[in-house]
Length: 260
Image 1 (cartoon, rainbow, N blue to C red):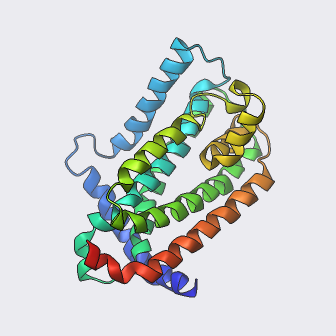
Image 2 (spheres, rainbow, N blue to C red; image 1 turned 135 degrees about the vertical axis):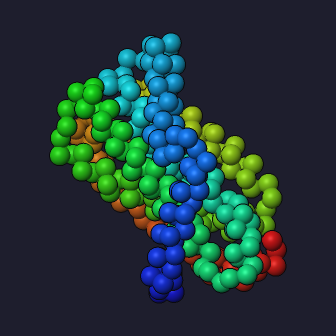
């Protein structure tokens, strides 16, 4: 871990610079420029709210805010996971010509996703104010909950980034897995209300995305404290995944250039 920490310190400025460059390139040829980072998540929220709130008559309180909080957490997790699988291969020139710890590539990517997450959080707060959702100090628990989600996503991303070099079908398998997680995470429905008994219990504890979504809604919409035990368990699991991912990359990063 000392090597990991030293590399993070050494290449942190590069990761920031690379993230800024990527964000600029995303909107360089767009007329609406950075507004797309606001329009895209807002439009998805409107679609899900209309389909599941109007057509399927979901009576969840503050449903638009409920959906948008779920989408915010999901989009970050989804981007981190899908973006990690082919990350080394898509940076072939950099990997083969210059030495850089491979997890710095994921760190840089995560900064772009965190920036977009920040925009979504601002929209979330604006939407909650519009719907007159009661604001309490429990909203501050957003930060540690999202921190757990970040560490979890980073740990899973490290492992997928490694195996994505050697397994060409991993991207397809990951997409299938993410689609399943999408529908089992309660983005547009309340798991604890829709599903009863052991199924609800299992989904909210075995599925970390569903757990984080549920906790984010608890502290923001319902004004309750999060599950400290659950957050601690998933933090420990996430840190273990990070350690495994860093170890695998340190052990195999010299072989990546030969494979790609």
